[in-house]
Amino acid sequence: MCLAKSELSKLVERLWAAAPRTEDAARETAEYQALAEFCRRTFTDLRDERVFEAAGLLLSILRSTGSPWSKRRSGASCEAAVAAISNAFGLKERSIIHLCPLDCAARDLPNCRFGNAEIADLSRADLAEIIRPLALEEHYPALRFDVERLCQFKWLIVRERRETGTLKDRLGSLLDIDLGTFDLVEPYAKTMPDAVGEAVFKLLLFPWEDNGQPHYFPWEPFSIPWVYSIDLDPLRIPARPPSADSLSWEPDSPFTDADYETERPMAWDLGANVESLLPLHAATVDERVAKFDTALPSDMHGYAALARHFLVKGFRDEGIDSLLAHVTVIDSLLGNQGGSGNIESVDKRLRVLTGNQAVCDEFLAVYKIRSNYLHGRPVDEVLKKDLIDARRAARWCVSSLVDWVPLHPAPRRSRLLKAIAG
Image (cartoon, rainbow, N blue to C red; front, side, top):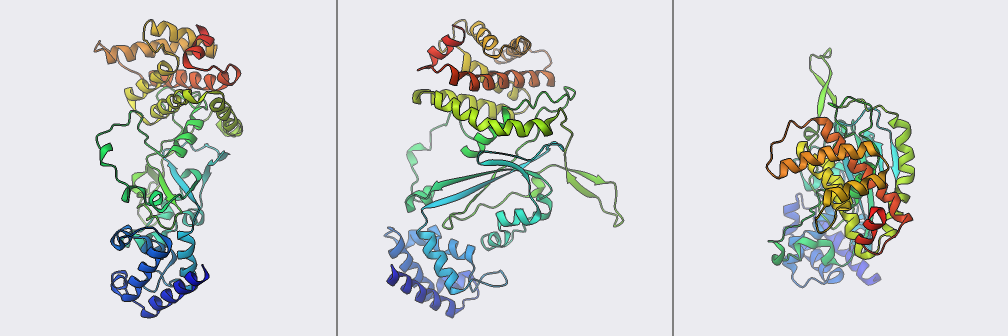
C-alpha cells in the first residue's frame, strides 16, 4: 500500500507540474492518462480503460477536490489530491443528505428533529456548507446556485448512511443496465427517496388537518416540489440542483427605494398550537413506527408499505386524486381481500379501531364520492372539505393502526383484521 501511495504521489505531482489550463487539455496529457491508468489498475477491477474514463471517476474526484485547471481561485495541493483519490476508492461507507424545500410552508411551522430527519431553517452559510456551490460549478460551469434566495425557505433535511459496496454498486446504472426490466411497471412507484418518504410518512401522522382554519384553506402544512440528494461519495457526479424559481414566491413589499419589487417565500398561518404540539409528536413518532414495524411478521411488511405509499400519495396528489388516495389508504388496510361486503366490513373495523364515530361518518361520505367517481355515476360537486375529511379519516386509520398492532400482534393479515372486528 505504501508503494502504491508513493507511486500515486509521483503521478499526481507530474500532472500538477504539467499545469494544463483546462480540463479538456488535462485529459489529453500523458500525465493524466498515466494517472488514470494507475487508478484503474490499482483501485478497481475494471479491465477496460474506456469504461473507467467514461465513468468519469478520476475527474469526479478532482472536480470536488480542486486541480491546477480548477475554475476556483486556488486548486488543491498535490498532497490533498493524493489523499482524496486514495480515500475515494477506499471508501467503505458514504453519507447522503436529502434536501427538501418546504414550499408554501406555514409561518408558524416549528423546527424539530425526529430520527435521521429534521425540519430546520438554514442560514446562507449552512446551505453553502451542505451544497458546496464552488464544487458544483466545477461540474456545471454555467451554474449559479442561488443560495441567497434558497436560504429563505424552511427545509426538511434527511440524512442517511449506506455501505458503498463494490465499484459496480457505486456506479449502478452506468455499469449494470438490465434491459429486461425496461417494460416493467412498478405498482407502488416512489416519487421520492425511501428515507425521505419515511420521514414524510412520520410527519403525516400528525393531525395537520385539524388546524382550525376554514375548509377552503389547504390542510397541508407545506409541499415538497423536489428533493435534492447530495451523495458525498466522491466517485459520484452530483446532480444539477433545481432552481429557486421552481418554488413559490410572493411580493414582500410594494416597492423599495430602488423602485424594484422584492419577493419572499409564499407562506400562511397554520395555527392550532402546532408550535407546541409538533415537537411532542416528533419526540415519540420514531418509537411508535418502530414498534409497529417490529410487530408485523416479515410476510406482512407489504401491509406496512401500503400504509406508507397511499398516505404519502394522498399528500402529494391534488384535488380528486388526493381524495382517492386517502380513501384507498383505509380500503387497502382494512378491506377484505376478496372484496365481498367490503364497505360494511371496512366501516365496522374503522369504528372499532379509531373509536371516532364522527370521522367514520365522514369516511362513508367520501367513500360514496369515490365509488360514484370510479364507477361512472354522477358526482355532485366535490368540496375542499371532502378532501380534508378523506385525509382526516386516513390519518386516523393509519395512526390508530400504528398504535394498535404492537398491542395485538397477528401472524397474517386475515387474523389481524379479524382481531379488530371480525
